Length: 141
Image (cartoon, rainbow, N blue to C red; front, side, top):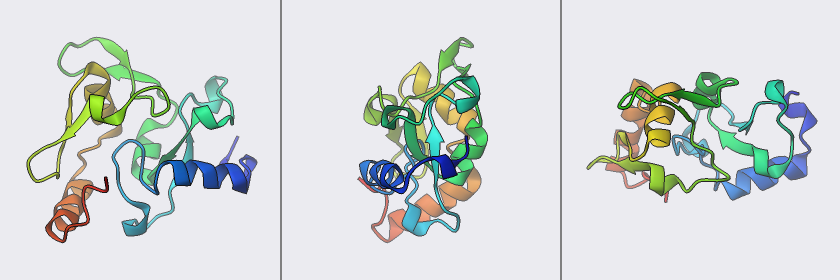
């Protein structure tokens, strides 16, 4: 189902819970040129629900790269592992920032596969992170 099937109250809950940041790449919605989406962690096309525990806030880039994927190939181990699950896993246990907070580093198989599959270090994002870091607006928390 499209985002339109999600009530405005549920949409607000997801947005507030994520502090207005993409739950994958940590982009901030206030600096985005496109509206963020309410993303189904376990896709509707695979039986996922509209329950709050299956919803995440995602920027358009992460949402488009994720599509209906739930797993990917870890670039280090070459094993298929699940993508990061924002409701079941703690972001800081799977991701870290490099020294200037422009690149994400995967700390676990799930973190690495999510960075690779969702392209969390895409050029435009890295450039935006550098600018926001220089003015003290990144990382968001």
